Image (cartoon, rainbow, N blue to C red):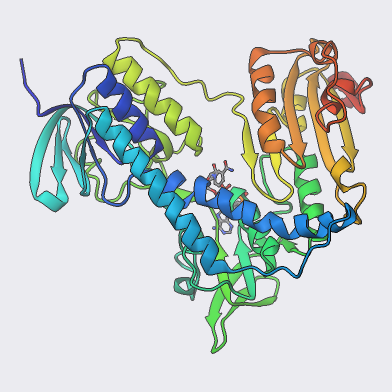
Length: 461
Ligand code: NDP
C-alpha cells in the first residue's frame, strides 16, 4: 500500500479549509494545512468580521441622534478612525489566535507558506522548497477582489482589502459595484460621515435580490444622503493633486479622496498548478467539483469560494465539513445549496431566503405576496423617516412559503430563523397558527392575513 506524508493536505486556512482540517483530524486523519498569509481567511481577516465591526461603528451616529427623542442629552460626539482600526485589528488578531489554537488542539500541522499542487498526491511547499505527499488534497484558497484591469487609472483605486487599513478616512468616496460589498461599504462610509456615492452599471442595485428589496434599499440609502447612481460606469480614473476623479460613460466627473471597487471576486487559482495536475477549471478559473467537492482528479477536492458556487462563509464551512465527513468518516454528505438564508449588512440591513417574487412567478402557477411596510417602533418618537419591509412569497396553490425578504433593523438575525421555516417547507397557514410576539416588528410575519397581490399564470397569459 502506498504511504503518504499526510492523509489530508489542505491548501488555505480560511473558513472552509480550517473546518475540513479540524473535522478530518478529529476522525483520526493526519492533516496539514498550508497558509501563506494569516489563519482565518477572508471572513476573519478582511471580510465578514471586520466588516460587521465597521457596520456597528457606522450606526452609532444615528443612535446618538435618535437618543435625543427619548429624552437623552447627547454631548457633542466625534469619531476617531484610528481608534476603530486599532480595536478592530486587536479583535482580528485575537480571533486568528483562536483559529490557530483550535487547529493545533485538533492535531493539525500548520505550515506557514504558499503551497501548490504538484500532482494527484503531491504538494510543493513554496517557502520551504520541498514537496510532501498526501492521500487527499483539498483546495480551499478562496478568492480575491476583481478590478477592471483595462480601466485607465485602475491602479489608483482600492478594494475592500485596503478599506480595512486606510490610514485616514477620506472626506468623499465613490464605491463602484451594486452588490453585497458595494452597498455594505457605502452604508459604512456614509454612517461614518464620509460623503458617499455608489455607482452601479445596471438599472437597480443588488441584481438577483427580490425587486422590492432592491428598490426599497435604494430609497433608504438615498434618504441617508448616499448618492446612488445607476446605469453608469467608470471609463477612467484620473489622479489629481488633491485626490481622484472618476470619469464615467454618462459624462460624470466624480471627485473623491478614494474610489473603492467592489465588483465581485475571482477564485484564487494562480500558480496553484491545477491545470498541470489535470484539475478541470471553469470560465473564471474555479475548480469544478461534484456535490461532494471532488474535482476531476479523484484525490483532489475543493471547497469554498475557489469553487465559485455560493460565495458565503457558512457555505464554505458546510462544504469543508461535508468533505471531511464524506472522506474521513465514510459518510457521503452532499451539500444542499438551495434556499440559503443570507444577510446584507447595509443600513438598513437586509435578510433574504428562498425565491424572489419574480422567480416564484416563473416556477409556480399561482403566487401570493404578503407585504408590509411600516415605520419601526423605535423610530416613532424620532424624526427619522425610515420604513421596514417584510415580504413573504407564497405558493398560491400549496400555501408553502417559498421566500422571505426583509429590510430593516435586525433583518440579519430574523432571516436565520425564517431560513429554518423555508427549509422545512412551512406553509403560510402554519405561520398564521403561531401567536404573535408583541410589540415587535417580526409579528408582521404571522399577522398578514390577506395577500397584497395574487398572481396566477392563466390570468397573466
Ligand atoms: P457581488 O457579486 O455581490 O456584486 C458585484 C457587483 O459588481 C454587481 O453589482 C455587479 O453588477 C458589479 N460588477 C461586476 N463586474 C463589473 C464590472 N466589470 N464593472 C462594473 N460593475 C461590475 O460581489 P461583491 O464584490 O459585492 O461581493 C463578493 C461576494 O462576497 C458576494 O458575491 C457575496 O457572496 C460575498 N459577500 C457576502 C456578504 C454577506 O454575506 N453579507 C458580504 C460581502 C460579500 P451586475 O449585477 O450587473 O453583474
